Amino acid sequence: MTIRHDWSLDEVIALYEQPLLELVWQAAAVHRQHHDPLAIQRSTLLSVKTGGCSENCGYCPQSAHHDGPARKSQGMMSLDDVRLAATRAKESGASRFCMGAAWREVKDGAQFDSVIEMVETVSGMGLEACVTLGMVTAPQAVRLKAAGLTAYNHNLDTSSEHYGAIISTRTYEDRLQTLANVQQAGLQACCGGILGMGETAKDRCMLLQTLASLDPQPESVPLNVLVRVPGTPLADAPDFDPLELVRAVALARLLMPKSRVRLSAGRSDLSREAQALCFLAGANSIFFGDQLLTTTNPQVAADEQLMRDLGLHAA
Image (cartoon, rainbow, N blue to C red):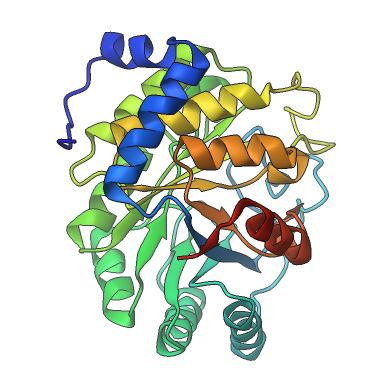
């Protein structure tokens, strides 16, 4: 299948609105053309600096604007603690180690220097290193690349139309500029969104259309389902239908055939059957480990059992 960057919104919506099983069948066929359908890449995510973020993202318990459980800033983790966590992740079968810091943007200085050391350490252990640090400038992205960083995560979260209802402290254009800085530095872009924040199906289609229009397309597309945290503005958001996640996974696979589509936050609330359908529809990556920044994730033993039961193996 040819990689396209010129999908129209009408084309994307037409794909999305097909009968679910037809959409999944099409996506599964494309998935098999570009990937081993039984291979699942496993990433581990660690918060190296938690809380006190100046952004007002409506879903985030780390925002200083809300009354979430992680609103107060904590110090940076030590390099030794990060090394230990990365060692455990590698021993558990993770191939990528992701580090997140609750910042609006990267600021040059001691903290960024500490992140550079963490990246060098993780990369030196034979793991793919990924960070999510908020906005980065072009020179900072170059420095991260030189330190051995594999990928930079910076999600668009939702469509440009729905974005203002979720966040007001950073613009959509700011996010796109960070992605441009990352890709121009030769880093892989890890970029996806969050489903279940009151968006429409059209918003989900617009988000994935925007991601598919990037050239190159993101190496990884994490699809999160909102984790409703008390104290945040979205704590009382309505339930999200897991079948809509399956639709989003299948659409992502059709629009971005070579990208890794990652089941991310919210997976703890998915049944084994829903996860299996997502894998069939083209998801081929998960976050692996008991914790995702400040929210829970399925237990490692449960994930290992699920992979055995489905006949899946680590990529």
